[in-house]
Amino acid sequence: MSIVLALVTALLFACGSWLLMQRRLTRIIIGIGLLGHGANLLLITSGGPGGRPPLIGSDPVDTMSDPLPQALALTAIVITFGVTAFLLALGYRSWEITRDDAVENDIEDTMVARREADGPEGPVDDGEPTTSEIGEM
Amino acid sequence: MSTASLVPLPIVLPLLGAAVTVVAGRWRAIQRAVSVTALAALVVISILLLVEAEREGHVVQVAGGWSAPLGIALVVDRLAGIMLVVSSVVLLVVMVYAIGQAGAERERIAFHPLYLVLATGVSASFITGDLFNLFVAFEMMLAASYVLITLGGRPDQVRSGMTYVVISLVASTLFISVLALLYAATGTVNMAELSIRLAEVDPGLKAAFSIMLLIVFGIKAGLFPLFFWLPDSYPTAPGPVTAIFAGLLTKVGVYAIIRTQLLLFDTPGWMGTTLLWVAGATMVVGVLGAIAQDDMKRILAFHIISQIGYMILGLGLLTVAGVAAAVFYVIHHIIVKTALFLVAGLVDRRAGTSRLSEMGGLVRTAPLIAALFAVPALSLAGLPPFSGFLAKFALVDAGLEVDRWAIVTASLAVGLFTLYSMTKIWAGVFWGERDTAPSREPMADGRLGSPLWMVVATASLVAGSIAFSVWAGPLHELSLRAAGDLLDPSVYVEAVLGVDR
Image 1 (cartoon, helix red, strand yellow):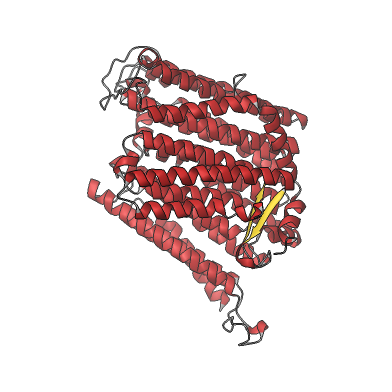
Image 2: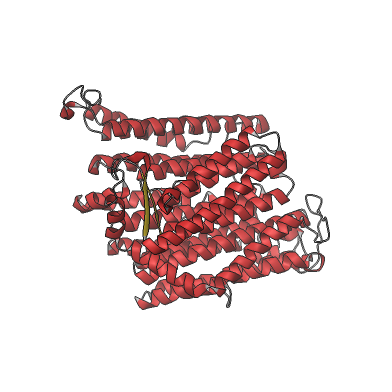
């Protein structure tokens, strides 16, 4: 049983990590979801083998399953759920603005990179001395 | 009523405030009154708790009436007390600033509740004695920060917000995984009990845990090589939000690193060396990144990274003097960095842009802003007699005590580059002439040129950083005592597990 759970966890982590590397936001969100499931499964597995419901007096204590990881997993699931919903909303907003769900490069990073490529005398978008000084650094 | 019963209040109060501000969403005056009251009360309670922690060593309260390993422990020791006081003061000041600034706070009814939830998460991270609760506290803080950073929904905010949310979620997933593995290995998530049980765990496994936790918190703190998300995402948020993120969020990560590494893993020597390498790389890369930037907020954001390096440097020395210097540095940094970002907000408003190439001459049109910038900027660069000099002096002194010459030299060189960046901002913003039109219309209002409460808030933080240098002696002694507690985990363990209620 726990070897199956371990393999499933590994599979979820592998798929999740692969999807996370993609440019499309929808894939990233699915990747995050898979990673979250993998982590929660790991939490459940960490409590050891399953057993009887942990109600005091109903069964001998050593046959009960450990309730703490289940409680932790429940908390983690709720948190992942909420944040994934927010991420979906953010993705929708991004699609509304750009009509595309690719994650874009940072504008400032691109500008710094372009400045480096153009060199100090290149066609920079403004001719301030400070910018050309940076180009030489 | 004993002081121990105050311990849950830093969590309860702001959360209660958040609930009230949601209900009072339509009435801005009520929202403001509730927020300011809750945060002011938080400051008072934090000071009381710090005083008590200073007297007793540890103030412990176990939730739910269970005894320690079963119930969830809330612990205020000297470090947590210091962090609570500094963070609550900064939270209050930035709230006043936000109220003074038209924009983020006025147009969005969600601002107050989110800000208070953020405050709850920050306080909870400091006082929790339970690793899973630390995760929950982080999530509370981050969930609020996700919304705050995208508040307004501008295209650049959405773009950078996505990077921020995704990277934080990856860190959180990793955190859950470490928790699961730790629980499987030890059967507990209570930090005091973990500290005992991890001593019996195989050293290799223990090393893996400590590295995984370092990565989790390293992402939040912005350590090399995990910092890349930070300068892209922080500057796009509304001014006061950027200030509070820059001042507090990364430092919560640093706090978690200090707490977990020292308490749980009894930090071995190789970990100290690793931390020193990471610290060195973080300092150098951060400061070099800043040089290439043209945007004032991005320069400051890169400096957050480089300054985080200093704090980790103190921790990596693994001596009482080193850890004390790290704690001392964190206090200085929270105040100064928040002040600088508040000034950046004032400049942005006054000049209509935050690009250095589009500004100039503010020293003539807004001398007050120039003065408010000069003090924290020189302090960040480490010039005497400001707080940064004292903090760096403590670090260098601690480093030389154990003959870590290379890292001390690196830290001093980085200080020089920091000064260069600050000079660049000064020359770009305050001197010279403006020769290109700004992207937005500059705003100037009132006799001060900026809204009164924004100036009051910024000035009070600048005054705070000066007060830090005046009372540096007692503060450093307090940091030394905090570091002493941190390097002897048995005190913490006894305080938490020995208590019966």
